[in-house]
Image (tube, rainbow, N blue to C red; front, side):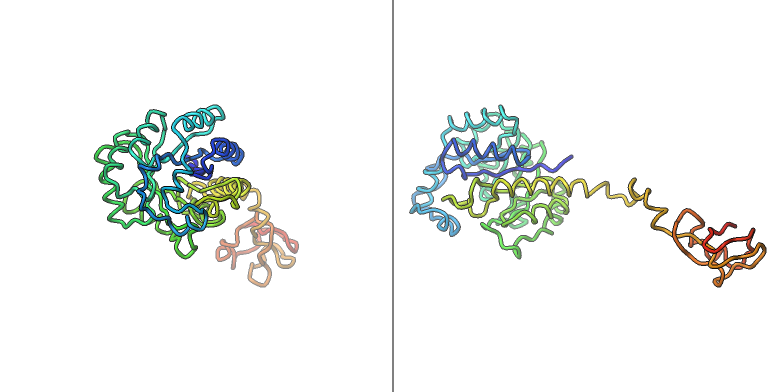
Length: 330
């Protein structure tokens, strides 16, 4: 099964349905499996007193988080139109809901997969509501301890008997390389015995590609039409050409991973006799002459007696006359 690649458009539409559709078009061109947005009612998501994160301050001029979210909000009707646009263009539509009303709306919209963001991993009512939908669910784990992840998993499993995938994630935009900790993919896999993916917030494309090499089955990556646009997530997002390069890299790594069983490949078999060596006459040898290290040696090509038979050959008599470089027979 191939890696499921999520192009995280998030709120990079800046509250514009037209920009959201342009993001869909670019995601399709990049070859991802799905595009994901964020669905919320701003006043249900953040209080009037909620401050903005530092990365949000760097990307927006809004005074509060509520002001910012209100500006970035798309209506339910706009999401219906966006879902229809994705269906028409044959790309999977996903959206992360951030409040109970939005989750119910997305359920009515018929989303095939649910994505729980890192910030909601300790939100018990939210987890229960999603688990009761009983569809394949993806859980991001940024900022979380193993205990918090385990607690969330246990809540989900009370109601969810469908597939659960856990994403390793570092919630910082952009994520410093020294805080990526990709090997945590193995830790999560060992502890939870489920499929593990990776939600990436680094700059560039090498880290998500490396995550696939470590076994990630889902990759989520923010992308934008232009990193210079105003908004909280643009600066830590890929532009369309970079997203396409990431997809190409991931698909190549998938091919390169192979079966995991060490054996000669079809193309290697064609090169085997050219690259390996055989036992040959070092000089002219007469029939009956004793074969020694003085009159035989090892040279290419490799379709004669293998040099691994060297000890079996030394001390035997030549079965016929051999010219220099002729393959030895016994």
